[in-house]
Amino acid sequence: GAGVSQSPSNKVTEKGKDVELRCDPISGHTALYWYRQSLGQGLEFLIYFQGNSAPDKSGLPSDRFSAERTGGSVSTLTIQRTQQEDSAVYLCASRSGSGSYEQYFGPGTRLTVT
Amino acid sequence: GQQLNQSPQSMFIQEGEDVSMNCTSSSIFNTWLWYKQDPGEGPVLLIALYKAGELTSNGRLTAQFGITRKDSFLNISASIPSDVGIYFCAGQLRSQGNLIFGKGTKLSVKP
Image (cartoon, rainbow over all chains, first blue to last red; front, side, top):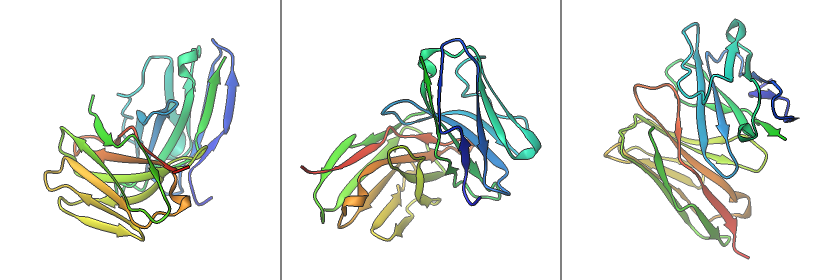
């Protein structure tokens, strides 16, 4: 596809369960980012992958959060033992990495923890 | 952590009015980006700024990268109903790969 895609678009889960959110970046983009957006708030950086380098995990709020990027393309954000405060929209963005700083966002996954 | 102060938080527009919003920071950024987000969607990139003092237009939108590298503004001229939404500024520090976002300016239509 032409843009960043994310799945699922909506996820409702019970407190304590694990969830996996998926991101397919724009083809050829080497950098991939995950952000979290709580209701009415700006975007909070979570994690950043650039090529084959070690990811920048400095934004992950707790060790319940982790992410992988397989084959330099698709990424999965995993939240273990979800809590109600994890409810938010999780946005993925990708960047070409060739001197451009422009990040392009997917539509997001709205996570609701009940 | 780093913060961007974006103002105003919200504003009401009448069709045809010009709109202005801005972001300031205590840190120096090497890139400023402006995004628009519609309900239920991800942010869409409007304008990217790379040089201090740079003034860039995209249709009715004009944005400037402040000369001190610590601020940026976005102007929308002759607003139309589809301009409603939330506008975010975002800055990138030279030393970091991620963007730092303002809290957004919500544009609504005057009742």
